[in-house]
Structure formats: C-alpha cells, structure tokens
View 1 (cartoon, rainbow, N blue to C red):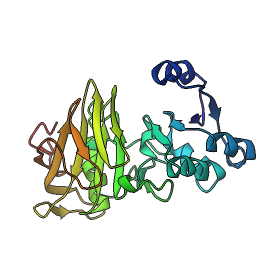
View 2: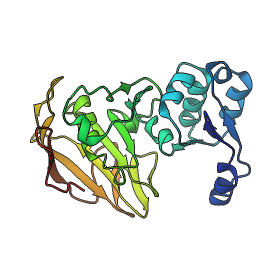
View 3: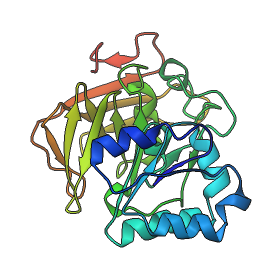
View 4: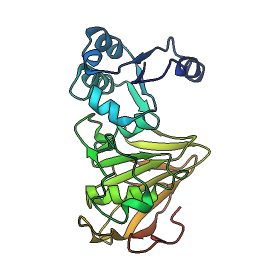
Length: 254
C-alpha cells in the first residue's frame, strides 16, 4: 500500500517488480476527511507493507495526524508488517519530525547562524516506532549538504537525541531487533552525542556552537543497531560553529 497526499500511482509497477508482491495499490489522501474514511482505514490495515511516498511531510502531518490513517499505519507496524518511506515519507517515521509547515526548507548555512531559525520546526506524536525514539530523520543528505541542519536538529533534541540522514539512491533496512543495514550507492549518516559532546551555544538568536558530536558514516553493507547504538564502523567527531562562514570541523564533515 502506497500512501501520498499528491501525485500518481507511478510507484505501483516499480514496487511490484521490486518486491514481487501479490498486489500494489496507491491511495492519495489529501485531506483529513479522506484520512478518516472507513475505506481508507480498512485498505491500509489489510496491507503487509505500507510505503510512504516522497512529497511534503508537512501535508502528511496536517492531513493525517490524529486520523484513521495515522492509526492504521501504526496498526500495520504493530502487527509485524513493514513500514517504510522515502524523502518526506522517511521524515515522518521518526519520533521527532522536521516539519517546515509552510516555510522554506532549512538550509545548513542559515540554521547554524541561529539556533531558533524560522525554518527549524519540529513535530512529534505521529507514529510510535520504538527503535526510532529520540530520533529525527533527514533525507537528500549529502546531496543537499544537510550535515549542519541535522546537527542543529540533533541539538534541539539534546544529549539523548539522534539524527539519521539518508542520502539519495540509498536505504537503511531495519529489522525488528533494531539491526539496520545500508543498501545503495551512497551513505547513511548517524549523529549522536556522548559524554564528550559539548553544546557550547544553543540559545535562540545566537549562532550554534556544538563540539565533538559523534558522526557515523555508513556505506553499503555497513550496519548500525538502532536499539543500542552499536555499529560495525567507528565514528569520528565533528563540530559546527555558526560564527564562521566555514562552520564545520573538520572542514569536510562527510
């Protein structure tokens, strides 16, 4: 079952060939009224795999939060089904959701200059996927230089928070035990804090300064356990300092 708020059924043939599923269907749910439809609720609940398409995650939150669609997606996950998504559909899987909600998407070079930049908006209480607790997802990661913005988002979550950034043409396949493996041509990044991490300046109206944030760079075949933060690879430490135009330490944090 493919869910989206705009677009076409173009995913159907692609996912049919990729998964050899018995059937693939797309439903465009572009209003709360449709999201509370008994038919839509029933169709989602009968699915074994729910795929959330790309688009604008703000519309997913505004149209689906608090509706039967939200409950039905959660039901599929809770019964042992598969829930996944790309781009906007990936954003809404984590406990914390970057939700631009009508403003321009956050850009690293801008948000590092102000911890409470107008483009930083975070929503909660959509899906409940325990292995993505205390997590905020990001997408198009390397291609759009989102390391800085994800570091700022992670700082908003605090020392127990974690950011997971997925680059294009790349996936993170997660099993029920939290074991996650990267597949694809590019990288998945994980940002998290430990006792050495310093949130030196995280106050509204001021440039963001964070030191010694752990950065994991996962390539195809590399693994990361989302339940205990263990990994097959070792992290490096990075920092951001919004007081400077070259705000990354090291200069290339990728």
